[in-house]
Image (cartoon, rainbow, N blue to C red; front, side, top):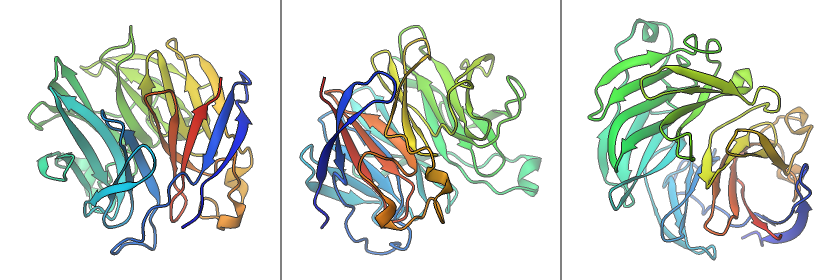
Amino acid sequence: MTKTTKQKIKADISGRNWEWQDRWVEPPIPVRGGANQRTHGVTVLRDGRILIFHQAIPAVLIYSPDGKLLKKWGDYPGAHGLTHIFRGNQELLWLTDEILGLAELTDLSGRVLARLEKPNLPIYQEKPFVPTWVAEDSVKGKPVRLWLADGYGSHFVHAYDCDGRYEFSLTGEEGAGRFSCPHGIAIDPRPGHQGALLVADRGNRRVQEFDRNGKYLGTWGADFLHSPDGFNFRGEHCVMAELYGRITIVDGKNQLVDFLGEQKNARHLAQWPLVDRSLLFPGLFNSPHHAAWGPQGEIYVVEWIRYGRITKLVPLD
Protein backbone atom coordinates (compact mmCIF):
# COMPACT_ATOMS: atom_id res chain seq x y z
CA MET A 1 0.00 0.00 0.00
CA THR A 2 1.31 3.47 -0.90
CA LYS A 3 1.79 5.69 2.13
CA THR A 4 -0.05 9.00 2.26
CA THR A 5 2.25 12.00 1.89
CA LYS A 6 1.37 15.49 3.08
CA GLN A 7 2.50 18.92 2.01
CA LYS A 8 1.31 22.51 2.20
CA ILE A 9 0.02 24.20 -0.93
CA LYS A 10 -1.36 27.66 -1.62
CA ALA A 11 -4.56 28.38 -3.50
CA ASP A 12 -3.79 30.13 -6.78
CA ILE A 13 -6.01 33.19 -6.27
CA SER A 14 -6.61 33.79 -2.55
CA GLY A 15 -3.26 32.42 -1.39
CA ARG A 16 -5.07 30.43 1.29
CA ASN A 17 -3.02 27.57 2.72
CA TRP A 18 -4.16 23.96 2.38
CA GLU A 19 -2.64 20.64 3.35
CA TRP A 20 -2.49 18.29 0.36
CA GLN A 21 -2.79 14.66 1.48
CA ASP A 22 -1.58 12.77 -1.56
CA ARG A 23 -3.13 9.33 -2.09
CA TRP A 24 -5.23 9.73 1.03
CA VAL A 25 -6.36 6.14 0.47
CA GLU A 26 -5.57 3.61 -2.24
CA PRO A 27 -8.50 1.63 -3.72
CA PRO A 28 -8.23 -2.08 -2.90
CA ILE A 29 -7.40 -4.69 -5.51
CA PRO A 30 -10.79 -5.39 -7.11
CA VAL A 31 -12.43 -8.77 -7.54
CA ARG A 32 -12.60 -8.01 -11.26
CA GLY A 33 -12.65 -5.05 -13.60
CA GLY A 34 -9.28 -3.82 -12.34
CA ALA A 35 -7.82 -2.94 -15.74
CA ASN A 36 -9.51 0.47 -15.46
CA GLN A 37 -10.32 1.34 -11.84
CA ARG A 38 -10.70 5.06 -12.50
CA THR A 39 -12.08 6.97 -9.52
CA HIS A 40 -15.17 8.80 -10.76
CA GLY A 41 -17.36 9.85 -7.83
CA VAL A 42 -17.02 10.89 -4.19
CA THR A 43 -19.37 12.06 -1.45
CA VAL A 44 -19.32 12.48 2.33
CA LEU A 45 -22.15 10.79 4.21
CA ARG A 46 -24.06 12.35 7.07
CA ASP A 47 -22.01 10.48 9.69
CA GLY A 48 -18.70 11.57 8.15
CA ARG A 49 -17.89 8.41 6.21
CA ILE A 50 -16.47 8.93 2.72
CA LEU A 51 -17.96 7.05 -0.22
CA ILE A 52 -16.00 6.49 -3.45
CA PHE A 53 -17.47 5.28 -6.76
CA HIS A 54 -14.87 3.76 -9.09
CA GLN A 55 -14.70 1.59 -12.19
CA ALA A 56 -14.02 -1.79 -10.65
CA ILE A 57 -16.00 -4.54 -8.99
CA PRO A 58 -16.92 -3.87 -6.22
CA ALA A 59 -17.50 -0.29 -7.37
CA VAL A 60 -18.64 1.41 -4.14
CA LEU A 61 -16.07 1.87 -1.37
CA ILE A 62 -16.99 3.32 2.03
CA TYR A 63 -14.21 4.65 4.27
CA SER A 64 -14.06 5.94 7.82
CA PRO A 65 -12.86 9.56 8.26
CA ASP A 66 -9.41 8.21 9.15
CA GLY A 67 -9.19 6.23 5.90
CA LYS A 68 -10.14 2.71 6.99
CA LEU A 69 -12.08 0.72 4.38
CA LEU A 70 -15.36 -0.27 6.04
CA LYS A 71 -17.51 -1.66 3.25
CA LYS A 72 -17.51 -2.37 -0.49
CA TRP A 73 -20.26 -3.43 -2.88
CA GLY A 74 -21.73 -2.91 -6.33
CA ASP A 75 -21.40 -4.41 -9.82
CA TYR A 76 -20.80 -1.24 -11.88
CA PRO A 77 -17.90 -1.76 -14.29
CA GLY A 78 -18.59 1.63 -15.90
CA ALA A 79 -19.12 3.51 -12.63
CA HIS A 80 -19.49 7.20 -13.42
CA GLY A 81 -21.85 9.70 -11.76
CA LEU A 82 -22.58 9.66 -8.03
CA THR A 83 -25.37 11.76 -6.51
CA HIS A 84 -25.96 11.67 -2.76
CA ILE A 85 -29.53 12.58 -1.79
CA PHE A 86 -31.82 12.63 1.24
CA ARG A 87 -35.43 11.52 1.30
CA GLY A 88 -36.60 12.35 4.79
CA ASN A 89 -34.00 10.82 7.10
CA GLN A 90 -32.87 8.26 4.53
CA GLU A 91 -29.60 8.68 2.64
CA LEU A 92 -29.69 7.33 -0.90
CA LEU A 93 -27.47 7.28 -3.98
CA TRP A 94 -28.14 7.84 -7.66
CA LEU A 95 -25.48 5.89 -9.56
CA THR A 96 -24.81 5.87 -13.30
CA ASP A 97 -22.84 3.31 -15.29
CA GLU A 98 -21.57 4.49 -18.67
CA ILE A 99 -20.80 0.97 -19.90
CA LEU A 100 -24.05 -0.72 -18.85
CA GLY A 101 -26.18 2.35 -19.63
CA LEU A 102 -27.69 2.34 -16.14
CA ALA A 103 -29.05 5.03 -13.85
CA GLU A 104 -30.10 3.47 -10.55
CA LEU A 105 -31.22 4.62 -7.13
CA THR A 106 -29.78 2.55 -4.27
CA ASP A 107 -29.58 2.63 -0.51
CA LEU A 108 -26.23 2.66 1.26
CA SER A 109 -26.13 -1.14 1.23
CA GLY A 110 -26.57 -1.39 -2.53
CA ARG A 111 -30.25 -2.37 -2.67
CA VAL A 112 -31.70 -1.04 -5.95
CA LEU A 113 -34.85 1.02 -5.37
CA ALA A 114 -35.53 2.59 -8.78
CA ARG A 115 -34.13 3.00 -12.28
CA LEU A 116 -34.39 5.64 -15.01
CA GLU A 117 -34.85 4.14 -18.46
CA LYS A 118 -33.60 5.39 -21.80
CA PRO A 119 -36.26 7.60 -23.42
CA ASN A 120 -37.80 6.35 -26.64
CA LEU A 121 -36.45 9.15 -28.82
CA PRO A 122 -35.40 9.18 -32.50
CA ILE A 123 -31.87 10.30 -31.61
CA TYR A 124 -31.20 6.89 -30.08
CA GLN A 125 -31.48 5.34 -33.51
CA GLU A 126 -28.26 7.21 -34.30
CA LYS A 127 -26.46 7.65 -30.99
CA PRO A 128 -25.85 5.44 -27.94
CA PHE A 129 -27.35 6.03 -24.51
CA VAL A 130 -24.45 6.80 -22.15
CA PRO A 131 -25.78 8.30 -18.89
CA THR A 132 -23.27 10.33 -16.89
CA TRP A 133 -25.13 11.93 -13.96
CA VAL A 134 -28.48 12.22 -12.17
CA ALA A 135 -29.97 15.14 -10.23
CA GLU A 136 -33.04 14.92 -8.00
CA ASP A 137 -35.19 17.98 -7.41
CA SER A 138 -37.16 17.64 -4.18
CA VAL A 139 -39.49 19.65 -1.97
CA LYS A 140 -39.56 18.85 1.76
CA GLY A 141 -37.67 15.63 1.16
CA LYS A 142 -39.96 14.34 -1.60
CA PRO A 143 -38.85 14.19 -5.26
CA VAL A 144 -40.77 16.35 -7.71
CA ARG A 145 -38.57 15.90 -10.79
CA LEU A 146 -35.58 13.77 -11.77
CA TRP A 147 -32.96 14.78 -14.32
CA LEU A 148 -30.60 12.50 -16.23
CA ALA A 149 -27.59 13.76 -18.21
CA ASP A 150 -26.64 11.70 -21.26
CA GLY A 151 -23.31 13.44 -21.49
CA TYR A 152 -21.48 10.95 -23.69
CA GLY A 153 -24.28 9.80 -25.99
CA SER A 154 -27.03 12.13 -27.20
CA HIS A 155 -25.71 15.17 -25.25
CA PHE A 156 -29.26 15.67 -23.96
CA VAL A 157 -30.50 16.22 -20.41
CA HIS A 158 -33.72 14.27 -19.82
CA ALA A 159 -36.49 15.17 -17.38
CA TYR A 160 -38.59 12.55 -15.54
CA ASP A 161 -41.44 12.86 -13.09
CA CYS A 162 -41.10 11.81 -9.45
CA ASP A 163 -41.97 8.22 -10.38
CA GLY A 164 -39.34 8.02 -13.11
CA ARG A 165 -41.62 8.50 -16.13
CA TYR A 166 -39.97 10.38 -18.98
CA GLU A 167 -41.37 13.87 -19.62
CA PHE A 168 -39.12 15.97 -21.90
CA SER A 169 -35.52 16.73 -22.81
CA LEU A 170 -33.20 19.73 -22.89
CA THR A 171 -30.64 20.11 -25.66
CA GLY A 172 -29.14 23.42 -24.52
CA GLU A 173 -30.72 25.23 -27.44
CA GLU A 174 -33.32 26.44 -24.94
CA GLY A 175 -30.51 28.53 -23.47
CA ALA A 176 -26.96 29.50 -24.46
CA GLY A 177 -26.65 26.90 -27.20
CA ARG A 178 -26.54 23.18 -27.79
CA PHE A 179 -24.82 21.19 -25.05
CA SER A 180 -21.40 19.71 -25.75
CA CYS A 181 -20.95 16.96 -23.17
CA PRO A 182 -23.43 17.95 -20.45
CA HIS A 183 -21.34 15.88 -18.07
CA GLY A 184 -22.50 16.60 -14.54
CA ILE A 185 -25.78 18.02 -13.26
CA ALA A 186 -27.04 19.13 -9.85
CA ILE A 187 -29.87 20.90 -8.10
CA ASP A 188 -28.41 24.04 -6.54
CA PRO A 189 -29.25 24.18 -2.79
CA ARG A 190 -27.50 27.49 -2.06
CA PRO A 191 -29.46 30.45 -0.66
CA GLY A 192 -31.16 32.28 -3.50
CA HIS A 193 -30.59 29.43 -5.94
CA GLN A 194 -32.77 26.64 -4.53
CA GLY A 195 -34.27 24.42 -7.19
CA ALA A 196 -32.12 25.58 -10.13
CA LEU A 197 -30.76 22.84 -12.35
CA LEU A 198 -27.05 23.32 -13.05
CA VAL A 199 -25.59 21.67 -16.14
CA ALA A 200 -21.81 21.36 -16.46
CA ASP A 201 -21.65 21.98 -20.20
CA ARG A 202 -18.07 20.73 -20.28
CA GLY A 203 -17.30 20.86 -23.98
CA ASN A 204 -18.52 24.47 -24.10
CA ARG A 205 -16.56 25.41 -20.94
CA ARG A 206 -19.54 26.85 -19.07
CA VAL A 207 -22.48 26.16 -16.79
CA GLN A 208 -26.05 26.50 -18.04
CA GLU A 209 -28.82 27.01 -15.51
CA PHE A 210 -32.54 26.12 -15.78
CA ASP A 211 -35.55 26.12 -13.50
CA ARG A 212 -37.37 22.91 -12.58
CA ASN A 213 -39.60 23.22 -15.63
CA GLY A 214 -36.69 23.57 -18.04
CA LYS A 215 -36.84 27.35 -18.46
CA TYR A 216 -33.44 28.87 -19.15
CA LEU A 217 -32.14 31.07 -16.32
CA GLY A 218 -28.65 31.99 -17.46
CA THR A 219 -25.07 30.96 -18.08
CA TRP A 220 -21.97 31.50 -15.97
CA GLY A 221 -18.34 30.52 -15.76
CA ALA A 222 -17.44 31.01 -19.42
CA ASP A 223 -14.79 33.58 -18.41
CA PHE A 224 -12.90 31.25 -16.05
CA LEU A 225 -13.92 27.59 -16.55
CA HIS A 226 -12.17 25.26 -18.98
CA SER A 227 -13.58 21.77 -18.26
CA PRO A 228 -16.30 21.65 -15.56
CA ASP A 229 -17.23 18.12 -14.51
CA GLY A 230 -19.82 18.59 -11.76
CA PHE A 231 -20.79 20.27 -8.50
CA ASN A 232 -20.76 19.95 -4.71
CA PHE A 233 -21.99 22.52 -2.22
CA ARG A 234 -21.18 23.84 1.26
CA GLY A 235 -22.97 26.94 2.49
CA GLU A 236 -22.79 29.55 -0.26
CA HIS A 237 -19.83 27.89 -1.95
CA CYS A 238 -19.67 25.37 -4.77
CA VAL A 239 -16.62 23.23 -5.54
CA MET A 240 -16.17 21.97 -9.09
CA ALA A 241 -13.72 19.40 -10.44
CA GLU A 242 -12.27 20.49 -13.78
CA LEU A 243 -10.99 17.63 -15.89
CA TYR A 244 -7.99 19.48 -17.33
CA GLY A 245 -6.17 19.60 -14.04
CA ARG A 246 -7.63 21.72 -11.23
CA ILE A 247 -10.33 22.26 -8.61
CA THR A 248 -12.41 25.44 -8.84
CA ILE A 249 -14.42 27.12 -6.08
CA VAL A 250 -17.14 29.69 -6.72
CA ASP A 251 -19.20 31.81 -4.31
CA GLY A 252 -22.94 32.35 -3.93
CA LYS A 253 -22.95 34.73 -6.90
CA ASN A 254 -21.13 32.16 -9.07
CA GLN A 255 -18.02 34.31 -9.03
CA LEU A 256 -14.57 32.72 -8.99
CA VAL A 257 -13.05 32.32 -5.52
CA ASP A 258 -10.09 29.97 -6.05
CA PHE A 259 -8.23 27.43 -8.13
CA LEU A 260 -6.54 24.55 -6.28
CA GLY A 261 -3.79 22.23 -7.50
CA GLU A 262 -3.79 23.58 -11.04
CA GLN A 263 -1.49 21.79 -13.49
CA LYS A 264 -1.70 23.95 -16.57
CA ASN A 265 -0.13 21.42 -18.92
CA ALA A 266 -1.92 18.35 -17.54
CA ARG A 267 -3.82 17.39 -20.68
CA HIS A 268 -0.69 17.78 -22.82
CA LEU A 269 1.20 15.04 -20.97
CA ALA A 270 1.89 11.91 -23.00
CA GLN A 271 -1.17 9.61 -23.09
CA TRP A 272 -3.13 11.93 -20.78
CA PRO A 273 -5.12 11.17 -18.67
CA LEU A 274 -3.69 7.67 -18.46
CA VAL A 275 -0.23 8.97 -17.68
CA ASP A 276 2.46 6.96 -15.98
CA ARG A 277 2.07 7.24 -12.22
CA SER A 278 5.57 8.71 -12.03
CA LEU A 279 4.00 11.83 -13.59
CA LEU A 280 1.55 12.30 -10.71
CA PHE A 281 2.96 14.93 -8.39
CA PRO A 282 1.68 16.00 -4.95
CA GLY A 283 0.14 19.45 -5.22
CA LEU A 284 -0.83 19.08 -8.87
CA PHE A 285 -3.96 17.46 -10.28
CA ASN A 286 -3.99 15.33 -13.41
CA SER A 287 -7.67 14.77 -14.22
CA PRO A 288 -10.17 15.64 -11.44
CA HIS A 289 -13.53 14.03 -12.10
CA HIS A 290 -15.45 14.85 -8.91
CA ALA A 291 -14.92 16.68 -5.63
CA ALA A 292 -16.87 16.81 -2.36
CA TRP A 293 -16.78 18.96 0.75
CA GLY A 294 -16.25 17.39 4.16
CA PRO A 295 -17.83 18.69 7.39
CA GLN A 296 -14.83 20.82 8.41
CA GLY A 297 -14.35 22.41 4.99
CA GLU A 298 -11.94 19.76 3.73
CA ILE A 299 -12.28 18.63 0.10
CA TYR A 300 -12.00 15.09 -1.26
CA VAL A 301 -11.01 14.79 -4.93
CA VAL A 302 -11.09 11.74 -7.21
CA GLU A 303 -9.40 11.57 -10.60
CA TRP A 304 -10.05 9.94 -13.95
CA ILE A 305 -6.61 8.38 -14.17
CA ARG A 306 -6.35 4.61 -14.52
CA TYR A 307 -6.16 2.86 -11.12
CA GLY A 308 -7.53 6.00 -9.51
CA ARG A 309 -6.20 8.72 -7.31
CA ILE A 310 -7.87 10.04 -4.16
CA THR A 311 -6.66 13.29 -2.61
CA LYS A 312 -7.74 15.06 0.58
CA LEU A 313 -7.32 18.82 0.89
CA VAL A 314 -7.49 20.26 4.42
CA PRO A 315 -7.77 24.03 4.99
CA LEU A 316 -5.03 25.39 7.23
CA ASP A 317 -6.29 28.95 7.66
